Length: 400
Ligand SMILES: Cc1cc2nc3c(=O)[nH]c(=O)nc-3n(C[C@H](O)[C@H](O)[C@H](O)COP(=O)(O)OP(=O)(O)OC[C@H]3O[C@@H](n4cnc5c(N)ncnc54)[C@H](O)[C@@H]3O)c2cc1C
Image (cartoon, rainbow, N blue to C red):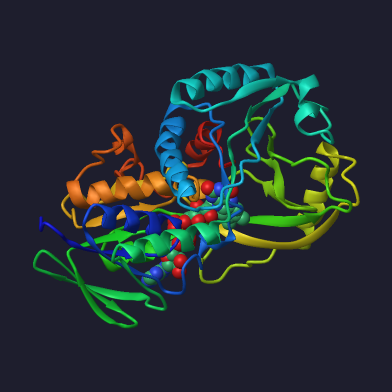
């Protein structure tokens, strides 16, 4: 390994940019190559929620690393809106798991507490507690503008010598001794190591290297809700999932007089072509969303639906991201993709681990995260893995 290897990162979404920044901070020479422009893929279509209300210890461990980076960047000017995050429970069993989550989060240094059904209105005065047992609330969680996050990281990267080439699609790869010659729309780039952070396009990039990668694009929709007059309080992020099904609704404050809501659906079975999918919210989805919203927050003042859009969650069969080597015999190609509905909040830790794999050959700074490697048992098609997906949805619901 050279003292200062040249690493090419494919994709300028949250995962690519965070990988690039971590690499450059460790002294690598870094070039990001992006087919379109910064945040043009899934990242620019996200609703930017960052939360820690998880019931699985590994999910919390990943956020310990991620939040450390976010707090650091926040201290350096990244906007982060601490509106809080409320996850609702419909059963006593869910409340039991939430109680465990409070303990795990406390140990991890995150603030959170349980709310019983009657207390929920203290947080969201318009909430109907119908069918609920209570919830878990983290006051420090919140959201950021993912487009702003990408540009913030891009600027930091440039300030320490990293380069970002936009409108520079990767077209082909030739191996050369100890590295690669990347054929792009803007000529050939020689590099020692490549990080594949191309989101829903990551399988196409892997194929250029002769690898098979199972990440698929799952379409999700979001809609703006206008309120007139604006609320007298700040709506936290509210996650209202129907037990075990992974379906439901989430909504949060966006700006004065506006909420953003997302219908939450269980895993789709039909992968989308990232170059040809409907990136608009369908009318039927808006109607469904309005119905769900009316049930949970019935008397929102003057609520009306605004613009909507759709984007892709880059998903893996077990709903955990791929970070590491597809083929241990090819240590010069690191994958950082498949973060599903968590690719904004997990990007800082994914970038940290991807940089570790590229420069040190293992995730030295985040012990325990080897399990994110795209090993043959994980790097499988979701098709024919219905049961595995259902289990994954229970363990790692895509609900932010
Ligand atoms: C509606 C919606 C809401 C969401 N809400 C949240 C949320 O609240 N919180 C959260 O954490 N996550 C959320 N997500 C998920 C999050 O947006 C994604 O997980 C994340 O953006 C994935 O980032 P990425 O860098 O892997 O992919 P991308 O952002 O898609 O970046 C990949 C990049 O690779 C580029 N590329 C592709 N092919 C090539 C090539 N041949 N050469 C060069 N470049 C190439 C693309 O142009 C693209 O810019 C949401 C997603 C959607 C759709």
